[in-house]
Each structure stands twice: as structure tokens, then as C-alpha cells.
Image (cartoon, rainbow, N blue to C red; front, side):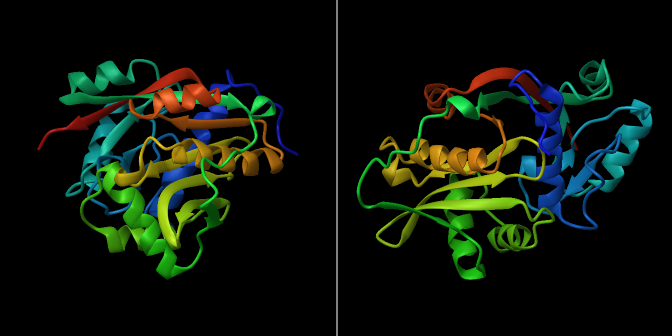
Length: 256
């Protein structure tokens, strides 16, 4: 039975994020997302695709040494949120890390979510499962997310996702994928990722409609809370839908 939660219950949202990234890395490439030092490595050359998801109950010197050894040769980040030990951010900076990004954690009570309304009669949604369409799905979200290489590897990771409770919804016009939204239902909250619109069709309501479509699926699954981490561009869209900022992640990286 799913737990009854509110948007202020932060730990389930952070657990959902750890599970998503660990699942994307796949078996053998990620630790248990509930571990004290969950490290994941997809091999994709993108800051969010490899890293440390938290540290707790592990001495920070030991954690830094292990992370740098296991993630050597990759582009990676260290996530610091409310599930990390107190003082982690300051400790990382004292050991040579630099803060590179802050990501708002936004949440929504699905009981109050508006129903999906398509911005045009030619827009359709479909769930992506097959290899050929997965490649198009990846190509659609890659550029907006800043992924410029390793697209075949990204597709491979998506197809081999370690969490089966992941739904990839595509917005389609005239047979072409023009928007993406990945919905993870692996925990008691619904977590959204890869919400993008192809550049030539932005500001037409596609991302909003696609997000509402994913939220409809989440609500029908029995979940009450949806969560996501927002870019600065996406924040106004999510606020209009009803998401509220409930916390932040601080991301750190070590030089050379």
C-alpha cells in the first residue's frame, strides 16, 4: 500500500531521485540507492549521468577517496541534499570541490492537478518502449539537456533501465516526436525527468500538456505526490501547473 504523503515529506522525494539515477546506470554500475554512499556511473559524458547521490554514515575523507577512484575518467557530480550528512557541502569544498549548480526540488499534490488539455488537435501522446523509437526519444531530449555525445549509449541505458516502473511519454505531431517526459513510479512518489520540447516548437504549451499527461498517469497509479528537479527555464511552467519549491540540491564537482 502506498504511503499517504504531503509535498513537505522530503525524504521520499530524495529516495525517488536516488532510485532513478541508480536505475539508469543499471545493474553492476550503481550501488543500492538506499546505501550510505550510493555511487552510479552510466558512462555518458554528462554531469548528471555519473556521480554520488548522497553521503551519510561514511567518513567524508573515505567517501571522497572512493568516489574519485570509482568515477575516475568520467564527468560526474556530487549531489548534496537533505538526505546527506550535515556539513557535507562545507566538507566537500574544504577538500577541493566547487559548487557548480543548484537545482530546486519541486513537488505537487496530485489531488489538485488539472486534467490534461492538448494545445492542438494534431498533438498525440504515446509510450515509448521499442529500440527504434527509443533512439528518437533520446535524440529529442538529448540536445535540450546538453547531451551532445554518446547518444547510442544513452539509448542503451534507457532500454536496459534497472527500474521497470519507468514510463517514457512522447508528444508526437505528424509521426515525429516533439517532446519527452520520463515518469518514474519506482517509489511512493512519482518522479519526473527529461521534460523537453524540440527547439522549433517551444512556447506552444507542449511541455505543459506532456507534464499534465504524465501527472494523470501518476495520479491513476494511486500516488499522491509528484516531484522533479527544475531548470531555470522550466520553473515557470511547473509553477503554473501547481508545483512548489520544497528544497534544493547543491551539486559539486572536483577539478582534474
